[in-house]
Length: 137
Image (cartoon, rainbow, N blue to C red; front, side, top):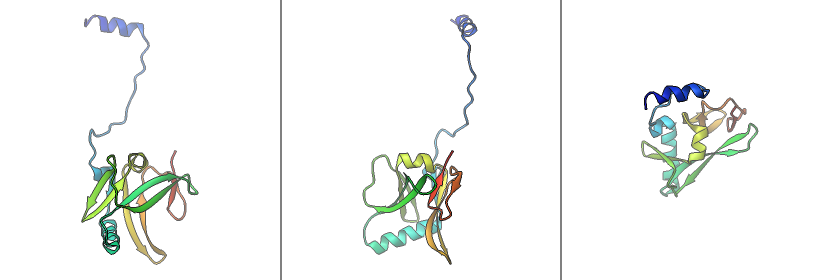
């Protein structure tokens, strides 16, 4: 059998494919991270609402750059959601959005111009001025 492999390989043209090395398993925080400031603000919002909920982070088509982020409180976790927990706060990300958010970090900024959740997304090639929409290549 070993003698057949080189004969088969000699008859067919082969192309060498190279793949980017990906760790076999990424932890939820490596897929989508949550800063301490974001976790603290999520906890404040959920506590003020008086209900058991998580912040759902999703990516939708639209916005001025092609994709836009959506943030909403959600009481229903789906079976295929990625769940990130930090300091009592929970964030839910659906698998479709996770493809566009992989490696990103959710932060909360409180500045003179206003306060908001901000996503630092390494997949975004450009973003609009307000930071709520982005594009990829």
